[in-house]
Image 1 (spheres, one colour):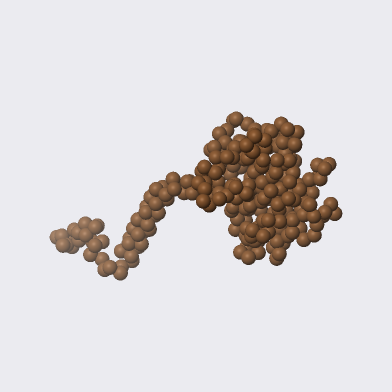
Image 2 (cartoon, rainbow, N blue to C red):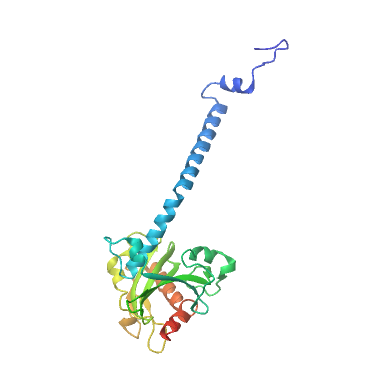
Length: 270
């Protein structure tokens, strides 16, 4: 109601409520309010679901390691099956295990992003920018304690994305048992054929290096002069993804990657 001077004494809220429903202030207020409520619901859901996400993330990691090592059986409890594997944090430069980190909780990706535990690469064929100084590797042993397989994490850039995966080696640290990627965003039907079981099966039995230790494994359309033992067929219609996989495998199996560790295995020091 106007006062003696003709001013409106209604409060701000009352005057706001008296505005037409389709007025600009009310429309903006409702939109902002809805956004705030929605963001609070999403944030609450994210926090509430985080433990479940972490459990699923760990389970997915364990399944991928079991699969690349040929030990995955859907009828067997995943945690029980994964208990056969020995996780170790490996110092890449020395090729030896370190107790500086807990292998059960060490985060390879976080280590690669942390300047204290990674190095910026100048020679970077895998296009990863930074490389962690430490990674988590897994050993699988026979009943008599001898080494059966070694599972190594690998990653590198393809055409559209960084491909993350594992390579499994036989006990001689040279013969490939399997290769598997668990995360990438390559082109469906082309680069994404890295997930095709037929293509993945081509890796089994291939060799990383010859008897003199020269790294020869190649992913290409044609085999290297040294022969098919060191050759995996290229992905049809996915040239850049093929080049990316070739680069990342050769990088991680080379001197800047696992070569010191593989030499220690061959020398019987692991």
